[in-house]
Image 1: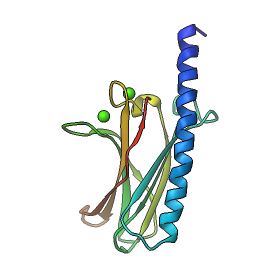
Image 2: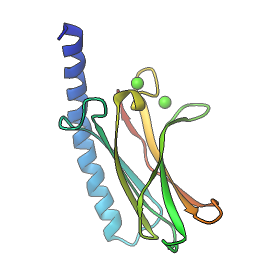
Image 3: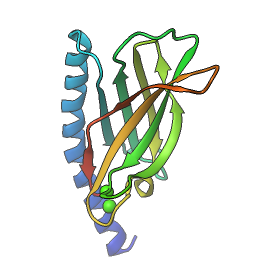
Length: 152
Ligand SMILES: [Ca+2]
Ligand SMILES: [Ca+2]
């Protein structure tokens, strides 16, 4: 292992520790949203996991709550990851089909650091959740999470 590789690993681990703490706060917030009757919002956490395959070590967890109830048999929830930019946001990965009960959507998936590295320097990541009519493909509602920043 070269010195550079070691340094990169250390830097990644340091970043992951900070993100894990942030992720813990996010989980708390999602639970609070769930307990209250609040509608509309999404949450996102990105956590480095040493036990995931080295090619995709970041576990992305996305939660969304729709503003109203939809029939879960005629709709689905699609999740895409985006990088926020000044002029137009970068599409990073997706769509992932979320577990969906008609009002809440949840999905977890693993990605590489390269997928999350959407910018030179700090990356601003968010998830978009689309509630889609299965028959027509029409987007009935869009939910956007807050930004998770990091250096991936
Ligand atoms: Ca950006
Ligand atoms: Ca970056």
